[in-house]
Amino acid sequence: MDRPTNILASIENFGRIYRCGDCDNIHLQVGPVTVLLSIEAYMEFVTLVNTSAANFESAITRSCGGARHDC
Ligand SMILES: [Zn+2]
Image (cartoon, rainbow, N blue to C red; front, side, top):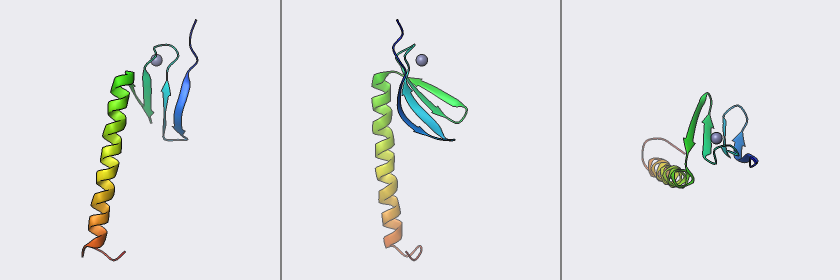
């Protein structure tokens, strides 16, 4: 008895993330590339992406406050 596939997020023509009903892993699909992650690895990945986004935002804020450009 297969469990249904659970789409967690999707962006058309970019990628999607879903919990697979067949293997119970998280499928991270971006373009032609699919990475299979265990639930635990997926949670680590979420932390990784969140941290990188926060650091990226900090870097942009720093550069906007500096002399690199006017904004
Ligand atoms: Zn699967």
